[in-house]
Image 1 (tube, rainbow, N blue to C red):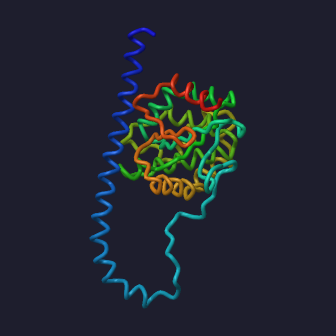
Image 2: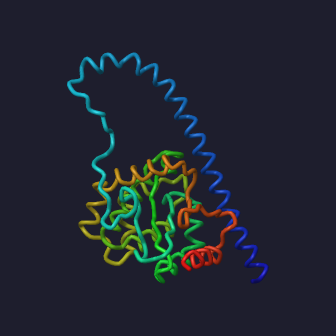
Image 3: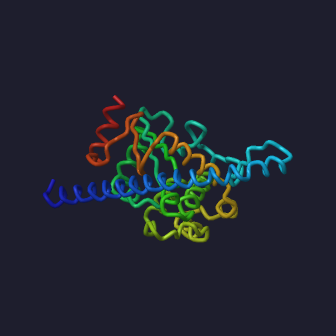
Length: 257
């Protein structure tokens, strides 16, 4: 390998590491703000709880989710929160937690896409994608949610991987919530042969899988995962600061022996 190629790979790893550290810091700040807001809200809650009880005719939990949890066809894993790519008979499983607004996820996809496709197509590994809304939580907006729903709609059409790759190839700047627009997501779907149909368009516009994406992010939080992308091979979280595409391929092949 030439010195130029080595430098390029080191630079890519450095960018990925920097983006993940930025996300961790943003998530920590968000959690601190949430805790502070919760303390303030307790005071207001104590003042109004009697009024709520007096005027409520039932004991419902007050679920504020956007609707029933509808997993896309073929979803796998615990509570059907993963979208599988590759063969069920693969000896290894790569679990990837990702966010379509996440720059580090784009960097990972750019550098590892070829080997990920190779591992899935050869039957050496099945990849299970978990779509979360970390950037929406850190920066505001709904682009992570809307893109996650659209990708789930593409899974319904049997075209998840192609659309998944298109979303990363066209990812806007992290602070540009362009994916909040369904029209943008449908426009990009036009890059995938046969994806744009009335069924797909309705699925995107109706937010059919919104609650499923939200439930996936809740699982992300419950498991105390702090950054995207997080990549797990057969239950072991990989260190993306030292990983390379060649090392990933080697580890998967060794695990399959």
